[in-house]
Image (tube, rainbow, N blue to C red):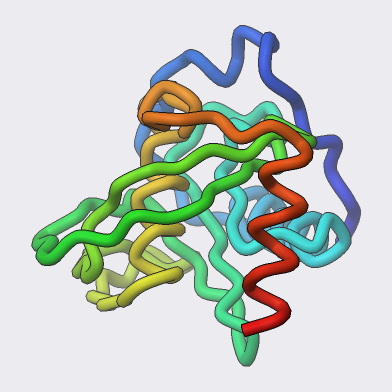
Amino acid sequence: MALRNIITEGNPTLAKKCRPVTVFDDRLATLIDDMKDTVIQANGVGLAAPQVGVLRRVVVVDLGEEIIELVNPKILEQSGEQDGLEGCLSVPGKYGMVKRPNTVKLQAQDRHGDWYEYEGEELIARCFCHELEHLDGHLYTERAYRMLTEEEYEELIQKEQDA
């Protein structure tokens, strides 16, 4: 396992649509393992393959107690609404306010090609939507209705810590 370089805003790879994974082999397993190491090292919640320069439909999401692997993920259902702060490992130092569904149910394959479903709420639902948009060449900054200044971000974080 190895750390991968996270590419940042302005790199044309981030604007490209990813191809589905069709071969479930050691190369895919290595990519997933590397992405897990990379998201942990970067202190992120999620990471999509295009963020490490690979145009395949692969995402990892750190749930705290485990990191789930999403290969060829598709949203099946979404409900509710939440409004919250987002950042991105590919957009370092910037944060914005984004509306997302509060609950998301998705279908994905694991590293072996087996299909499964997963449902997430709140932060996990937000992360699913955010990471899946990467697979279609989009960044959260396109969806944000307001980007925060550094001072506003620090003030918001302080309020959350005080609460």
